[in-house]
Image 1 (cartoon, rainbow, N blue to C red):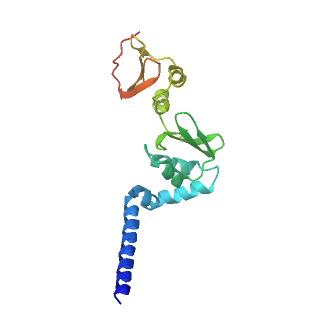
Image 2 (spheres, rainbow, N blue to C red):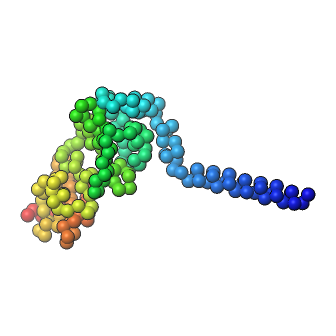
Length: 198
């Protein structure tokens, strides 16, 4: 009799440990990952489903979903929202998901190496300048030639040419290079030049 009691007690303890472990693992999953789709407003959920159903001719749905694409958003959440891409690409400094919207109208979402959203490009996203549009695609580790291909010739250089600056009506964009001509720092600030003209 004691033997059966010991076995039953051990079984109960083991079951409790398993249930506790499962609950703890579930609790450790980020909340926004567990409930991402359920916490979206009903109209956005409906728009998301409509966007996924159509390969093209989905301009209005794209316009409504673009504001939901936030900086640092995980790629899996973007896929939840937009569905499978029309095309995707792995590049040296980032990856992209491309969604056809209407003929040549394309919604392109860029991610860093940690699969976090860094940039959304679309005819329906308004930027104040070319610099603001290109800025998220300039990454630490890039060479001067790669930076120039995105920003062209800088408007202001430091005397040793280790700092490049560009400006638009609102911001100053500063790129700092190391001795190997690789980007080591990127700064976007309110318009106030700090480099000496060269």
